[in-house]
Length: 344
Image (cartoon, rainbow, N blue to C red; front, side):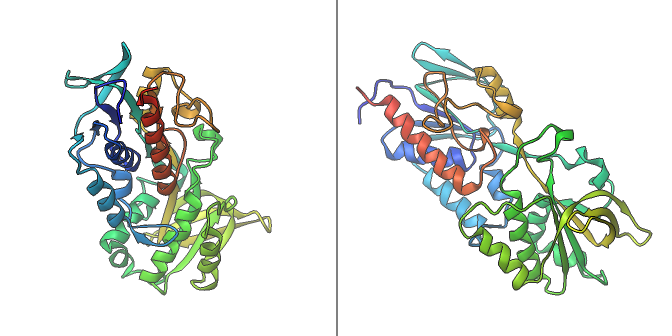
């Protein structure tokens, strides 16, 4: 394929979106420079244990994505934070924090997301009580088998999950749904039950959004096969008991009754927020959307495009996405770039 421009395509962000887009572009004969600010690739995938709905290994998916970028046409840069981008003639100039500069024929933002900082919801006690953890910390415990050791000495082995922490919450200014928290909780409760069959597990929720194929079946299986109990209600407060457990105060909104419950572990299902890199570069490029995410040109027919020529978007820098949706979206972005660079 011949192209109008000779500089590499720059991809900012080495998560699943950036990795997959880089491999697709290289397969189409284009040179790619892939930049990641952190010291490793795809930390939002690498810190997972299993992925839904098939419970396949997150490590296997990570290895497959990174292996595809071992390509002669892909130059990879870790610990390289892009602090500023600007239009340069018919291409783009990138500035690195250390002062280095790179030129690119086209630019793809794949800067991804961060998880909500649960310390902002002080009423739940995260960072205050040892028995309160986030869903991300639980993933690590499942990966390393630490959860069994943590609950080994507990007489009851009760675990409570709380949905929508940092999502659909006016007080945190995140009115949006983070999309994956509901099914992540379903996946995690099944994983926990397989690991600790005697554990008593409750999930407190506003409403459950099983939006993907096989997700509803997974939710039903969690109740019918693993005896997971779902409570429609919100936890208002968590505190420590004299024996080191966690007491929660909540309301069951189906029956309109307040309730108290003690648990050995309270798991906060934290939602997605735009990463700091997404916020900074979206502002730098003049494409700020709602809540700090990057704004695409059109959510239907131009979701990978922006109103800036040669600037493209992929993945959860635009909105919360699952890993599967992120990979699919990055492939679409790569093909838009191929089309953009192709000679008329």
